[in-house]
Length: 302
Image (cartoon, rainbow, N blue to C red; front, top):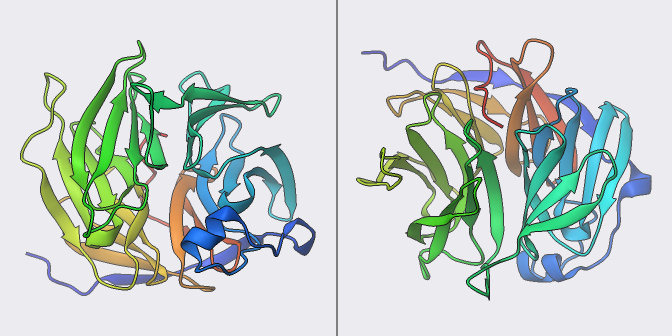
């Protein structure tokens, strides 16, 4: 067995939110999540459209940006919400948004219009959606995190089927956050931030899940946030207080770490670039997008 120490991979700055787009004001989000301090931006949700253009969210100010080039930031949408995760819809024309305030929304990439896709469940509001991912068959998995944690392990993981059926796969999560599907889509990985761990959810043929277990454990003030998967089944875990992306093998062994060259709040990542091997990372403390190169392409799921 290989017990070699994890490989350290350097990152570099790809782009940074321009001063003209920063808003140094206190928002409802910053009062709840930053002890009342102002937050001029907080980047999340990196996602590529069908043309290979990177989009990111700015949670406290309800904005979605497109990076046409490293120094060119285009405001795609601004609305009354707190957008976090993004996922490209299979039609290639829309991105779905996990919005903490408004539920699951749809962004028309051509017009910038934001409309509800799933605002409530059985007339109840969600706790606060965090991230989402589409399977190849159109199933949408999303986390409903809210302010849950070890003190209140009631976060939920849902699956929304293309026909509208909504399944609750998990209802005892201590802060469910980022999601990743295995390349064969038989396993769903969920970052449980306050548990400082990633859980493994086998997806059964009948649509249920069973034998849920802790796949990887970490440490630190925060915990695992956004995630991604490469074609070989390596799981990339953004840790929101340790300033790196941990690369975990299919067996659960940490084999590499992508270390931030800026701040320590690495919140999410996405594969992109001409060969699909470049990793784009949101570092939210400084409002920066970082990049690093990897050996394999990202998995084909959004």
